Image 1 (spheres, helix red, strand yellow):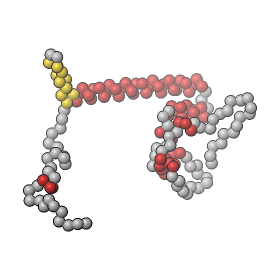
Image 2 (cartoon, rainbow, N blue to C red; image 1 turned 180 degrees about the vertical axis):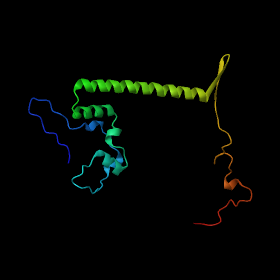
Image 3 (cartoon, helix red, strand yellow; image 1 turned 30 degrees about the vertical axis):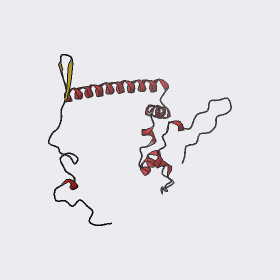
Image 4 (cartoon, rainbow, N blue to C red; image 1 turned 45 degrees about the horizontal axis):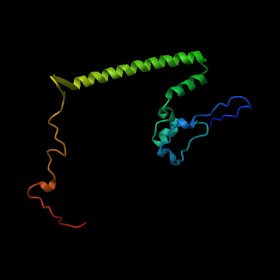
Amino acid sequence: MLPVTHLSPKGLAQTFHEGLQDMQSHPFSHRQAFIPISESRKFTRTDAGKEFGLPPTEESVPHPDLILLQREKFAGLDNTARVDKQRERNRQAMVRREEKERKEKERKERREMVVEKGRWAWRLTLATTGHVGFRYGVPHQDRKKGQVKIPTRVL
């Protein structure tokens, strides 16, 4: 059920099974759990993530692009095709990042108005009014008139 990596003959480069340094170890995953599963079904990291209430390792690893490259390698793509796909993904990520930054800047400009007068600049932000919370506007019970302020019973 578990993938096995055999040792390479002497003199050849050893292929590594998986990089344990890249995986995060969450405290929830330190506990043991008995999960009944049939032998014909593969138990994957996604299943383990669901059991422990964590995202699968493939999603939480800090370098998901390396995982994607390995999947493409196992799928049989040659090196030039994989490099071209990675370049295209990098270009799309750059476009998405620039678009996100532009939207954030527009949102900030809409929220904040700058009034410049001589040497001073005032930054005015929109505020919502009429929402009174627990802390502001609601007195504590012991500050109200007519309330008994000393304990009347012992627990």
